[in-house]
Image 1 (cartoon, rainbow, N blue to C red):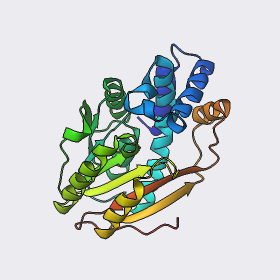
Image 2: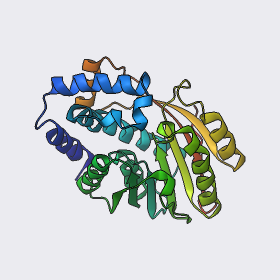
Image 3: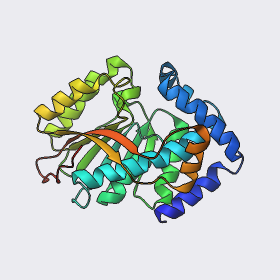
Image 4: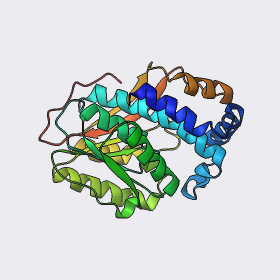
Length: 257
């Protein structure tokens, strides 16, 4: 199935029992949860209720797909001979799917939410990707380490409890030392991801790169309409990334940002 066909199927899947107005109202509440009431994230408040789940899948899922695809194309892994994507905190699977599509790799997703894991597996099937997602805690997830593995943490680390971040960073750096490539993607707002500085310093010290991104890539029509109705600005898609390539792969061209 093409990306356009996947997006059409996503609309059909999540608008079967909800109107666009209901999803738009849920998106307003969901965006408020992410920006103003982040304490609810750890307790699963962001995915409480059918409306918020539909809003997350319909709006944030495709947005994360588009942003991750653009980041991957800019930093260079696209087309490299990777065999495996390990997606930590995979959500509905869209960021990992973008990496897998760009690299031709199989995918392994992990998320604490059974609903998100079911959605991720649907995403993989819809996009004809090899692999599956499983329910699991990132703290105990197996992180692959080989020259053909990309370990992805997209829109995940910022939602973890503070005490979980340093152990995860150490595990990621250990995976890189054993051959894996690392990619971390987060929102660009500095107010919420105060941990970013120490992570960026650690990955740069190991030979990695940090980038801020601003893309003019347009969201699909449904996502633009939902954003407009919810009062969210999407004229420009932004993100920040940390990338630490395996020594077995040549880095891609550095983009301005």
